[in-house]
Image (cartoon, rainbow, N blue to C red):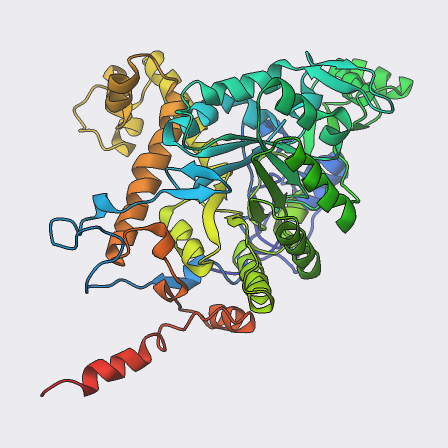
Length: 548
């Protein structure tokens, strides 16, 4: 893969490209002409300004965005090491038992039992999360994994009710938060996975944690420090003047100012396509955060989590220290590379610590803590930032053993929900195409307009037999992606290594296959060998002990 930079012929994230392919280092064509029919990033910016900072605005709410940049080090720089001798993690070790369906992929996220090592990371007020929430919530509950309600959900709810709470209004009722919680609990078995609620500065001011714990019986809470996609607060687009004014009244920063008479007039004339809503970032001290954690505990929280973005190493170390000192139940570290809604493209591409580098830093810091204080209790750890398949999950958990128990995902399950929802609509309208059937592996002689949900979704019939009611296709899609693809894929990888439980994974289950991986792992003393050095003493012992 070639190294990605913004100096490419095409920048698909902002909808720009150059007239010729041999771009200069600046990103401009070698010869820039006055009558060029193409909009490069600079020329588009000359017309649309700040809009070009973000992924294509016309797809906001119906898309997710992530960076295509090659950071020089990823989970592809590790190779899984398989085994042919014996097996671990089974009650009986014989050929009838050493089969991949017997692998156990259950885990813990904090004090929550999980059927799979996956948690859906904070999906908040972005429209793409709201529009696909039913599928995400029901699908994750069906799969027995946790789902996190992200920031600003209460503040963005036009029907939320507030009372005067001093400096800031306090929420007393909200349709959207109730919808999000109830959607998950509809198919929740009460044992596996849980609904977690996250909060940022705005949520704190509005009293969101007090509301969800007292009114909705939420006992798993997450404090958000940031995300890997950007180092500023959450952002969304607002499509009406009334909505922009409402959120400004609730304390949000809205750009342009919807109370400005000039802006109002420009809106009426169609000169402003939409408004931007921005969130604030926190300025908490060590003492304030630790006191906050204690307060949630005393109020009955069974799980207190921390979610942070990929800030500089010293800031990340500070947050790790906070989590361990505060005895939180879990911490999520979100690396550069992913994003769900509206993050500045330049931040996604050029800022934050890429996920694999971030994991090396996190694991290295946790090792330091255990070296300093062997009895220190380490919270369960989740990595996030561009995960989509079972090999990435396996490698991350092996690299982070024994700390990492889950992988947090957002873009991938949203994609599963969006596509499954779309396919469900196509089937309902009898509008499937031959190319769609071909992509799904159906015979060429099958009539496209006869496609059914039962045929399209491999888990459809099993779910219908269990629940005997119509389940939204989006939920079936998320469940199928988690259980049938990631779950079975992980079982196969575990069986390949002859380790039939996730907690048996160790760092010698992977090997570095690039010099960058070797350098990063050695720098943080992770004990992960290169492919040519792994098992070298065992290799010598096997060969020299032979009778030839």
